[in-house]
Length: 270
Ligand code: SF4
Image (cartoon, rainbow, N blue to C red; front, top):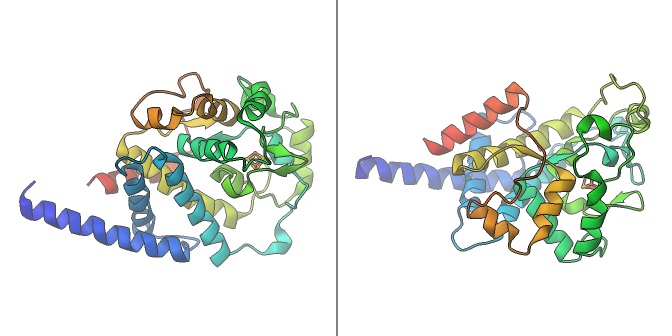
């Protein structure tokens, strides 16, 4: 690449980052343009590459999760349609898959006492029953998320993007899944929550892939346990160590989502 091209490339990245920060402040529209997703992903990528910052993975997850929150606040769903309310936690008994940065953000919250004051050992103990249980066996298995306390999420501010997507329109279907009934029924999900958290997810996964990290989705309990296993787990993962080696993972995902991640990663690499 010539010096002129390099300068132009640096200028493009600076402009994208500026636009990305603007979008983080105002949230994304319900149907964002590809360039808007790429602009925020550029900010996430810059965070993932921040030199000397051993907490940058968790902080990258924070950027994506804040984007989902901001987008939802700016363009909310119609409240009457949403079945979820405090004290209703059927979805916290389902299989949840997360990214490593989200696991590290949760681990940091646990270590700083922001998971209802539970200790690292207490959370790891609560995660143990989930480890190795397949998504199919979670249905009707009534195994709670280790961070569910007294029927409420103890880390609501830090919860993963899939939890932000899982906003039900019909509690009866959630109850069926909790009880292991009607296994073919699909829980109707709020399109607005799905879209906002989904766009934020793509910014995180696209940036991760552009930097060279695996974008496999990790089983929540085992991933959280691994992130909490050693104080320097995040730093080691950032250096390329496979600290989630034993964690069950989902390597395939919907084609549309896979295309979106690939598009963002290529745009960031171009
Ligand atoms: S992180 Fe919170 S919202 Fe997500 S499954 Fe666990 S308790 Fe439920």
